[in-house]
Length: 102
Image (cartoon, rainbow, N blue to C red; front, side, top):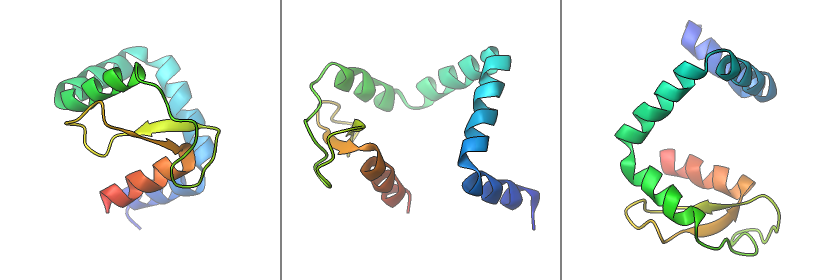
């Protein structure tokens, strides 16, 4: 098995450990994290703009898919229209993003 594939599978099997490793690395190397954020903002200005606009708009009262009322987030089907979003729970949001990548 290739090292990258092994790492990918390990991260998938151990999400809590991976998240903790990520947190420790960000605390130890804040300059690297800051540079990564700057690069992301330069490469994806439409995403950053959509998030800024949506942060000031009201969030719906429940997930439009499952009706959950907790852990609600905004999902932008089209970043070109930053004031258009749907309210979804965290679980449904992850599923939507998975579908978008396939």
